Image (cartoon, rainbow, N blue to C red; front, side):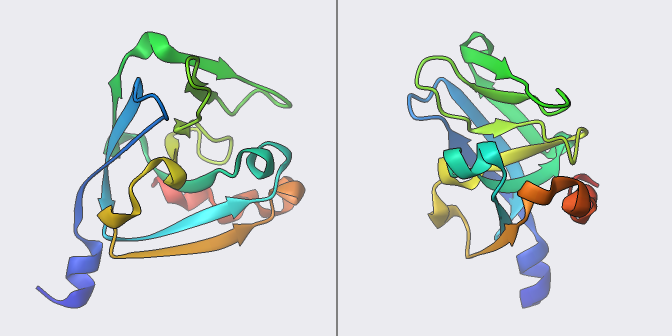
Length: 136
């Protein structure tokens, strides 16, 4: 297998909230690019986005532990653990058919390479299209 093929190969990676009641497993490559958004909620939370197709994520743990917060347009479904308050993943407005996993809720040793790119979420309308392909 070439280095490129190995980098594109997907394997299960796991993540969880602080208390572990909200967990997920996602099929992800060993090399990923996360987005650091500067919008009002992401900047406060320190959320690092790994946006993936919904079909590549299995939600584990107790579904009753989740609660949802919506604001502004109400399209994004910000799900978080009602016990520890950590947002391990959510359904983003930019990719309503996808899931944004919080890289901060995952052990980075699961990846060989992590690149973090800034995303200008303060000017969301002007930049949202740059993320739309991530859940394809």
